[in-house]
Length: 252
Image 1 (cartoon, rainbow, N blue to C red):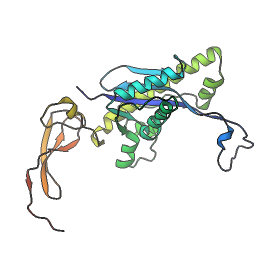
Image 2: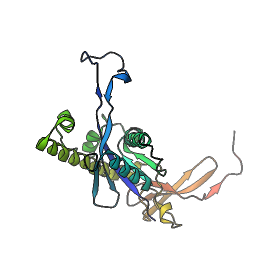
Image 3: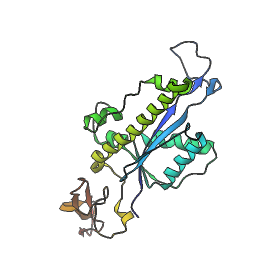
Image 4: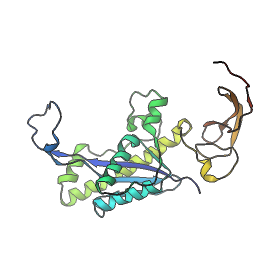
């Protein structure tokens, strides 16, 4: 069965706090001042290889139903692709799960593209909007800034309806953009093992699963050498599992 890869992005609503006397705060806000904690209000996701981008929000069936759908997606996924997703999206969704006393979904592997960018490149900014534009992948959707979030909290009637539609479009575009960046960064991504899900015992690209590979030299480890290859589809480098040669002794 092919690997299930979900490209995912969440959107959050800010907290409401009491006792703020000046704009320039010193120190931390005491938890007792929290009137309404920050929360996830919607998320969008797309299964890699499919066309449809899905969307769930607390205004479409309630907060609990939205959280349960997020659990279903993560439980089904073998990999979660996102931007700052390991530290932000996934952690916040897990917080929603535990506060609603929902057991953990099945394990998955995180493909956090912001981590890939920081580890491999030197972009002047590691924000998705900047990196995507530098890569020619597109841009985020303009959303009106904080006015959108305030309208989602306090708006009424047509103004609120328009704000919900804008947030849905904005969230979906983030997923589309993240997938575009993923495809460009794919040969630089580690920790993918797509061929193992295909259950075919022949050399293939670990990142895209292609069998179109070209052998080019060897990769030398401490005591063994391995045939090295490059994927002709995505460009990822790999090596065979079995070594070609080894040494009988090594210095210490």
